[in-house]
Image 1 (cartoon, rainbow, N blue to C red):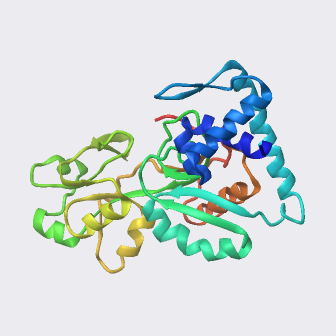
Image 2 (cartoon, rainbow, N blue to C red):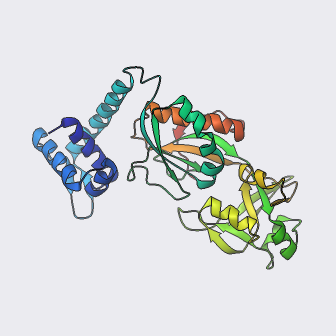
Image 3 (cartoon, one colour):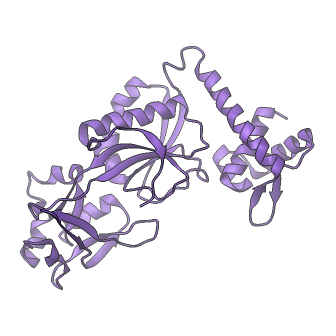
Length: 315
């Protein structure tokens, strides 16, 4: 039995909550993971896990051992990255998940500079607007807009996305140009709905003007759960859009989108990089988070507050 492999397998089973998911993230078979954990228990002469047909849980001994294993694996990672100049040039595979419009319009175009700086980091980038199980899917971090609802995560606020309201000329020709946000509640106006994946619902947008605050829900004929599809629907004239400035600005000079409601404003949408609290912040993860923060400082800086790490906040 390779003790390192056995400890790694045990930690992944705990974090993933099942032998099957642990095997998938380790790119091995469920049988191999099961055997490694059984051999580890035999060597230690204690039961580490309670197994049922539905779930896997820690015993009291297993919980104490898991805390030490996590620290030991982190120390081993630090030891490896400190050798042969690795600390100055982080290396290895990094699994991240980012929103689809942010990936297409901002992150991916900037990646050549990232890889020129860190040529030994291999990025596996999931591109989606869905909720990601960081532990179960073995993802190192996610980039997400909006206040985070999972208070168990650690998060760093890396930017603030400024928002505006826009519509395509084809929509305005058909429905007319609203002069006040409340007109979007009228029966002849439509918005494009965005389904927040955590509950599959749309939410009203709060808007401000000279001390006045209103919330606009609107009606839709189409609601989507992907940012690129949301933008495409607005460009096709299917309704009014609420967009971050970085998504809208490329369509303004050509007249594909028209800004609405001058004088009204929004609270900015915070942008976070979030990661599991029990996941060691390796050198490769640290430099990726710093790079995202640097990029956002150019395009969507945090409004009047320092960048810092801390627990994710709920809405």
